[in-house]
Image 1 (cartoon, rainbow, N blue to C red):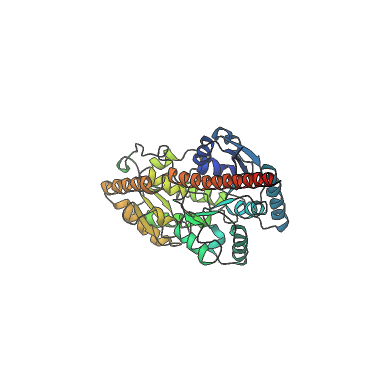
Image 2: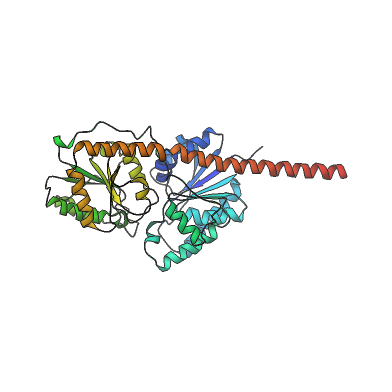
Length: 393
């Protein structure tokens, strides 16, 4: 019987539920037996309805302890040795590194997804060099390495971290266009104009620039509203303290909406979605905004410019530059409503043409199908060898 087992690993169950549920469901429909390995969180129990089994995996996501990382590698080895899947699918740094090393050692085919390079690649530090060496080791035997933008793919290929023949660009994690659709909204003539930033509350997401720009915009348009939506990640070294965010709110500068399982009502009631990030893979929050026909302001950096065509479905601003962001915000707020609606419509069209999650799912099914076909050929080859040996005997 052909091996139909797939192991997927990522650093949070939340990530699977929010970004990979379509892929898990598609694999399940194709008859694959899917196991998800991730740290346990509030979304762990929500994975079973997607058609997969959940395997709890303790992981120090932001830590650099060699002993803990070695323990993580051993855990991957033991689980993968027991399951012996057709393929191992890795997402985020540690699953991509330690899960892949274990899978390669067990001769299990690996498909990696480099969803974004994160803070480690924004600054060139000793840690950056270490991470690059780990990637070079962990990706060298991978059957496919998916990237979310051409900039990241080129960087990995040029620096010898991934082989050009297996490195391929996907349209981000894709977007469910049926779930994220334009919704009826209250026009700004009936309420204050509203800017919304959706992300984890991290410095490298540009949250501080957003707040500084808000103060500048208020000098010209005092009635404009600025909202923050997303969790405070206390374990991340780039996290912005909740106390500081509450100070901003208390001063009337921003409104903090905390976090939610459904961003659609907030996106639909915002006039412009803003993400002044320092670097991205392809930010899912911008895909959601585009799919819901909201105009966008984002930084002119890898990942963000894949979603935003300047002056078409939004505006691009300079990175780490609150003054330039404020200028783009003022420009957006002063545009005629009809122009903003055209921008939003262009975003929806772009999402349909380029970022449909079915494009991503088809790429994965194709790659896994090739592994399955290769496995069948090996099985036939072994059978023919055995038969030939018996005939000779």
